[in-house]
Length: 360
Ligand SMILES: C[S@@+](CC[C@H](N)C(=O)[O-])C[C@H]1O[C@@H](n2cnc3c(N)ncnc32)[C@H](O)[C@@H]1O
Image (cartoon, rainbow, N blue to C red; front, side, top):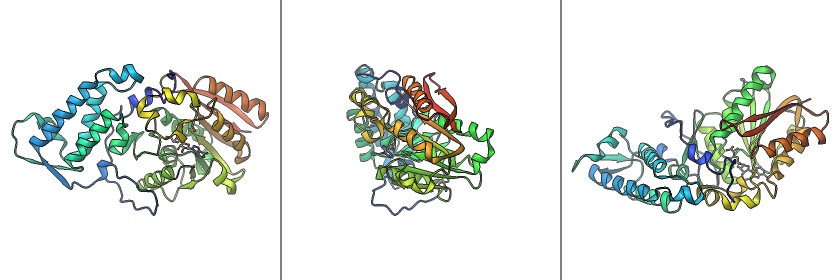
C-alpha cells in the first residue's frame, strides 16, 4: 500500500537537498572511540585521487545516461526519483567529489589533458552511481551526508536520513523558548535522535547553560550522532546516550525542561509500500511504529508525564492528521490536568504533523 501523506513516502526523499546548501568548509577534525565503523562523508575526505578530465567526462556521460534511462519508471513504481531529480543529484555528487567545481562546466571540453583532483577514486564514482540507480541506494548514503537546516550531517546505513519536515521541530522549540526564557537554560531530551539532527538544532539555540540528552536504541545512530555533535563542537552541551526511550534517562526524573521526538510512526503494514530508497535501505527500527504506528508515540507520552518538570515543553512528530488527533485526545483523557496548551501544527505541505504543548 502506498502512503499518501507520510513523510516517508515521497516528500521527504524528493525534497532532500532542495535548498542546495553546500558543505561547511571549516569543520573540526573529529575522532571517536567507537566499535562502529563510521563512514566519512565524501565532502570531508582528502583530495587523494585524480583523473584526467577526459576520463571524468566519460564517467559523467555514462552517469547521465544511467539517470536518463530511468525516465519516470521509479515514479510509476513507487513514487521514486525521476531523471530530472537524478540529474540534480549527479551535479551534487560531482560537487562533493571534485576539487574544482568549475571544472564541471568544462566536462564537455574534448580531449582536455588536465588532471582533476578527486575525493573518491573514479572506480568508486562508477560503483556509487550504479548503486544509486540499480539498487535505489539513497543519494544521502552515497555521499554520506544530508543538508538539514544550516547543518551538514553525516549519515550512513543504519541511521535515518533526517527529513526537511522535521526541521520544523527546532522552530517550534524556538517559539517555546521565546515565550519562556527559563526553558533555554534547562535540560532537554531528544528521544530517538538518529543522526542527532534535532538535538544539534536545539543545542544551537539554547542558552549558555542549556543542555540536551540525545538517546537512541541503535548503536549506529549513537555513533553517528556523536560524530555530528563533535563536528559542530557541541559535545559540552549535548550528551548522546544509548538505550530505549526513557531508559537512559532515569537520573532526570521530573527535571526535563523539554522533550522532543520524531519516533518511528509508520504502521507496520505500510512499510512494504514505501519508496524503495526508504523501505529497502533505511533502518526498519527508525520507521516501524507497530500495527497502528502509534506504539512508540504512546510509550513516549506515558514517560513524558513523569520526566517533564512543571511548565516543561513537548513536541512530537507524527505520521500526520489522524495520529495527531489521537495523540492529543489520548494525552487529554489519560493525563487530565497534567498536560496543557496543546497545539497541532502543520508541516509546510499543509499536513497536520506535530503535537506540542506543556506540562501543567
Ligand atoms: C524516525 S527516526 C528519527 C531520527 C531523528 N530524530 C530524525 O528526526 O531524523 C526514529 C529514531 O528512533 C530510534 N528508535 C527506535 N526505537 C527506539 C527505542 N526503543 N528507543 C530509542 N530510540 C529508538 C531509531 O533508531 C531512529 O533513530
